[in-house]
Length: 228
Image 1 (cartoon, helix red, strand yellow):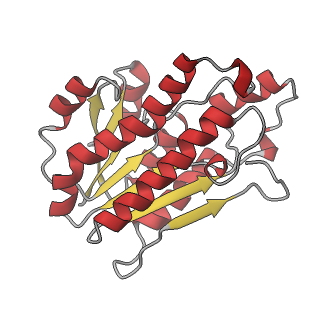
Image 2: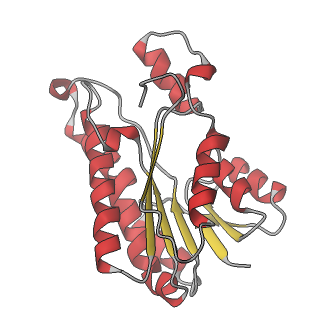
Image 3: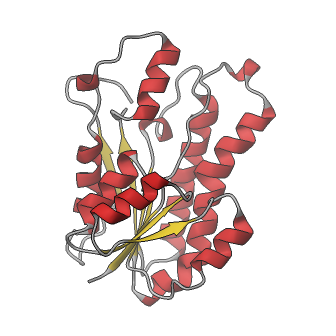
């Protein structure tokens, strides 16, 4: 079977993407070493783990050296910002959000390009509605997602043999979403948000699209809601 490497695979959307691709792909599950990552690998028979901090670039290069052919790379790892006003956001937060959400994705892609080229592979970037529009107090996060969109578009232009897909989901029912809603001071209602399994199904659909198709962008929104 073709091989897929998924970052951020220890929980949430990343874990669901791994489960959605398991029937059709051999899996490499990227994430910081943890019991959660090991548990996902155990549930998906045959999956192997790639326990590495994506922002430890020396360790990342060493960890990826053995990957010589790769059919699918899914960038699911990411962090949210504190949702403070621009005037209250320190430079350290900007650096963290850009480092995890953009620079790490760029470096993983760069290191794996030879393996992806060998397979005429497919790179999927899990973006956000915030990568298409910006609301107050979301500026650092949105900036990172706009940059991630540029990374995907640039890769698509530079590597025409690869398929490159950006997924733009609205707000998703995850632990991170619960933290965001708590910060916003609202009551959490899971029915207002996309299910992680739904987003994973969209990723799997793009990955498994016939070879003559190039799904460049997929936009998902919760039904009946304008939430990102």
